[in-house]
Image 1 (tube, one colour):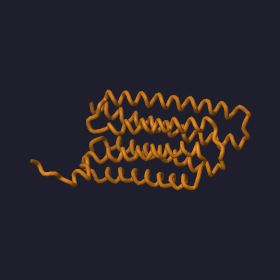
Image 2 (tube, one colour):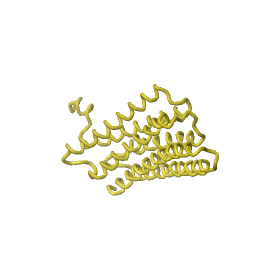
Image 3 (cartoon, helix red, strand yellow):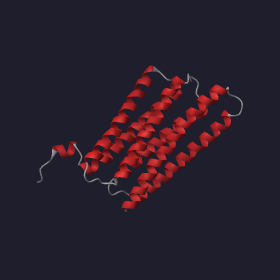
Image 4 (cartoon, helix red, strand yellow):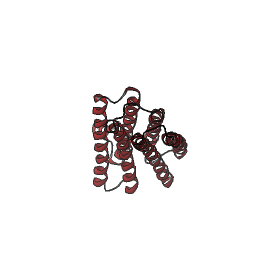
Length: 213
């Protein structure tokens, strides 16, 4: 009977570490999205602000861990450029969401539009789908399943685009003061950019898998 290696169970081999870090980063993005959604229903509190700053720090640490692992690895399971691209975009998603959370205080926003709330819910869906794709992403991945999930992510992103267009149309209808237009436009755009980054990550993963298939 082969001996059980406790350390190999606790610490995944180096060629699997990147996939583990990707999953950690995607989960942080999901938690940040859920936080933003909760704020949309309960207002920004000190507790939520503390959570936002905690997730910001966790996202940065996860990103740095990937880069550190990349620098110390002589052989990588994926092309180095692909690893770096995925890491950068995952960190970008989290930064965009946290920035939106904290900007609610900067912009003195305590009333949230229907479009903001709809964006928040759709963002949760996008980060959940992102987590699904990252979870099955590995050295030898299921191309068909990842393609299916990528199409589903594209549909979520398209819905996000529709919310953004509707929000912009409503914003410039003349119902808002000029300063409020600037504030809300920035909030909408920040979340829209997070949607785009989610799709960019899943599209990158699909391209990587197709190259390896």
